[in-house]
Length: 246
Image 1 (cartoon, one colour):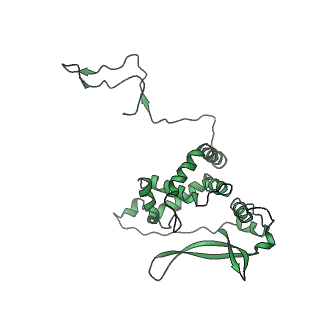
Image 2: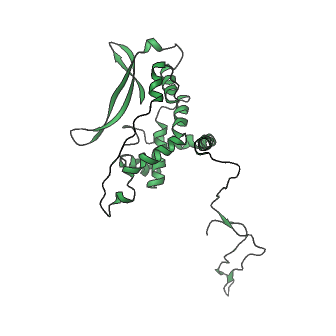
Image 3: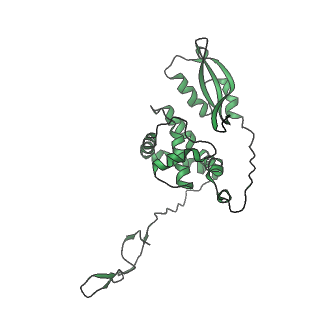
């Protein structure tokens, strides 16, 4: 759900809406906005401070809306959805079709790690105008389900049951997203760790860190096999120091 503004007799009104994808007459899935709750005229709630609507949206996503009437929509959970799938033996879907599993499982994991709330809050306090969280989701989906280049990952947007990016998105924003993630990687890691500790009782007293490298602790390295002219025919297997070739 999200807060949107519409015109009524020349005045700005606030409402709570929910995006829904439906099938049109041509059989294509299109986005439709369903009104959940008519909040009222903006003038009734505006506190006169800058960026009221932006602050209202951020507060709503954080679960502490500036408008008290919206609190029930933050606390009430939607009923669980049930999905029934039928597969035939040998179909790709049997081993994990992205259209079925990506946003049902991976997106839920991102939410539990606090990634969604992190990007929502930072978007509210920066000048970022595009949906940065959607770009992050698409790149995560692509990296886990169908690894490809950044531009090829963008083309996977419509491969999922629900399109990840909004219609008319700017492809260049994927590089802006990468820069934002790089600049805030420490904060992102801390947010994920905090949620793992709270929700999964993660114990950080002892941490194993995988550096994805191998090395040998030996007194002398294995000798190389040399040819008649001194060229190396075969390198010795064990060498001192870090190795990424094993």
